Length: 518
Image (cartoon, rainbow, N blue to C red):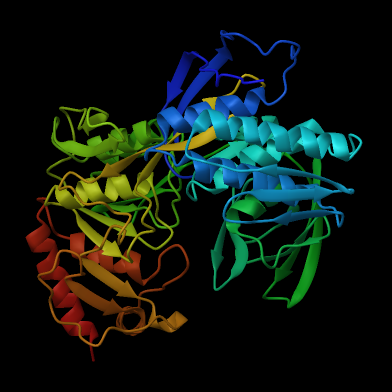
């Protein structure tokens, strides 16, 4: 019985643009089911899978290979069945699946309808032969996971809970503990706690490193996986064990999660002239918080800014455009995106007539600056005025769209790539700073030569952290985690400068380099 692959018209309800952890968001509403159902099959089997394969076919940034997609889907269903009685024999012509003394064969081609029929055959075979021990829900989820894993690192299927979390994060609010965390030297530790948060009230301190969460060892966890463990519904509890370096012993805390309003922007003055803006991520709250910082900076008489985007994993594309617009001429390009189709091209330009385009700016980035951070850094670098200082950024040059599926789950799908105004695809190298900070103290390799480079893909100047530390400490500067050598360098580059000039900023950077290289 042949079943035509159904095309579901999707109703656009709302849209939000974003990148990396928080990619471009298009929330899609209920599916309008049309077309003819198979005779005798009035059920919901594999409907979510069909929505996913439809979206991938129509929206993915590259034309999909359906044979590859269905192969990954079937193999993931088989893998997650987890039975010693299940074996798969792969042959050039046909594959044979054996389970509990029964066997079935399937062969995949590049025809979507044919491969759909083959996948259904395996789906029902596994469910029926397991005597329904393998649920249809788990098989469908596995098939979807298989498809997404065959695409790219940023495309992802989200169940209902994960989808709700993703949408909540774009709002800039979450149920959590109120701490900023980071990863360095393969250790996860606290950078700081937020004012009047559960973490601050419990006495958790900066530099405390994580040992376990709810009894689970977090040694091999990625920073995002730890963040997911710490977040949750308000009024729920979580138990943390942290190592306090100053005491050389572990401390255990049981904290109750609260709604945390994420403070994504921090402002302070470094001296009478230079303002410091630290942007931790790009949520809906970011520009509003930036404006508050800029308003205070105006009162403080600030004449230049250090814009710190280090450790910033990204966020909403619309917010990155708004942030960059405060430092660019109105109408100047910030970023452009290109999708699969030639006409799927979008430009984003500076929004504000009353901007700070004449104010000198130094932008700090590192290897953990990604996505929306790279858009801002790339736009300001290409403007020819701001100086970029630090390390090569992460290199995430793809745009994701979040789609809501009819069952309440969601799909984060790569739909286009973005480019800096000068046409640089940052996926290859990331944003390359003009002044590279080499953390030789942490064992980073030092280049053979520190000579000036005319290659735009390479830094113009390399500076070692060890030299900068000695130079600044000799002059009586107290360096710490929040005011390290990179921040002090940026401060000195901008000090006593009244006009945005990359050339002038580079001259001052070279003067400092000459004095610190002893």
